[in-house]
Length: 171
Image 1 (tube, rainbow, N blue to C red):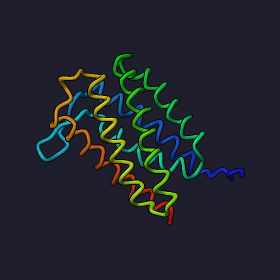
Image 2: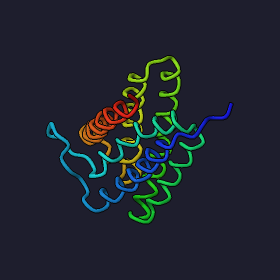
Image 3: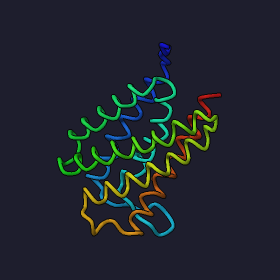
Image 4: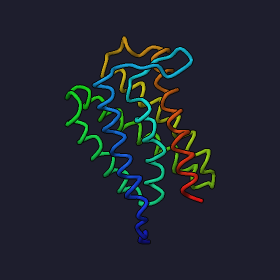
């Protein structure tokens, strides 16, 4: 079965790539910021969180091949805006976290539970991305309950914001 290309997929795919690049640029430029509830996270946390819902939308509109392409492009372009160490940590974390998101999102979406698929897969992706990125970018000492909680909270704020936009676009 051939999927008809949805032009909105180009917009969400571009937004996905931009979010990856922005996450790396913000983190390399500003370090850590407050995300609420007395927690802090890397400055790129919100942009990183947006990728999970954007990835879901690209998958629905264009298919898995496009998802893998936009992940690779976003990670590659990140090398232009961040230090090689930060971009490398981001590349590994994004790849693994987006694949974890994909593994959770796809079966939930197929069962007809799109809202649950977005939120649950976004949470799984946020936890995976936070653990992997903090460890690779800043070392094992940076992986604390407080730092991971801050990263996950910031990413879930972004999942919610993008979920509202995508939900509105689908109406």
